[in-house]
Length: 397
Image (tube, rainbow, N blue to C red; front, side, top):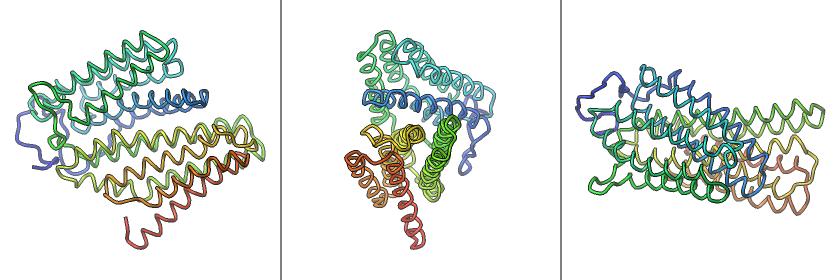
């Protein structure tokens, strides 16, 4: 039995299920759903820009994790349910509305809008799971998974709401606990006493669809970084800023090239043909590693904003962490993604991460202009692209 060939069953709502005929195409409904997250990434980028310290970075990471759970679990559901069927489309529109409210609450999520953020998050996560249980009736392997995940989701929901009612460090701790519980729950298959756990080999995942959907989210994040760059540039148009703008744009192009030129289409094929490993591979690749890649884009976007505002200013520790740390985080996440899929060591990306990390104290110690720091990050990304092209000529993945 393979993920593309589920056992014979009698679904209660057969019209809602996707057909299993190769890689399932992304529909216009899914693309419309994704549009909301352009605003989400913008909000996260601006939050990091306005809070450029360790606490701000931690909070941004926490918010990204929560938002990612909303997006990726909805994407898993549309891997099984057809997005263009009426009830499923209505569910997606409802989740999109909830995600829009979450995004609007991000700037003050650790202040006045914390309870709103928590309540909307809980409503979306619990509501979508209950809908899923209704929609997949008659498909035992899906019903079993959603039944086991629901109590865990309710548990994280309690932590989220209590966190929304309190403030300060207590809110951070409770929400972080919800994230950890969610990650651990998925990792161990949401076990319940007397019921066992949900095993990934039974999830009947169409991995190619998940790969394409996650690639689309990375593209959204890169598009948002260009939006931030363009918006900042329009308020400071001159010769110096034009050069900084071109460098920031080139950096976004380089990250896009690293991710999409070879590995994105190849990854879709690898996961689509992974057989019983598809569920486990997808869990690691998309739930755990892709938010790291997206985080790298968000940090890089904040670095680009600082580049455009102060291209000639000496590099500070914060600037180095944003300008060099963003691409390093992106490449580290992508290296782990490649290692999981191909079971190889992506040496060019690992080397690039080491170089970027080593350049941070050097740029700060020398007081190098931010432009030099950004140029170094761009040069490292281009080196990775050239290494990929060299491997392609030799027929190496």
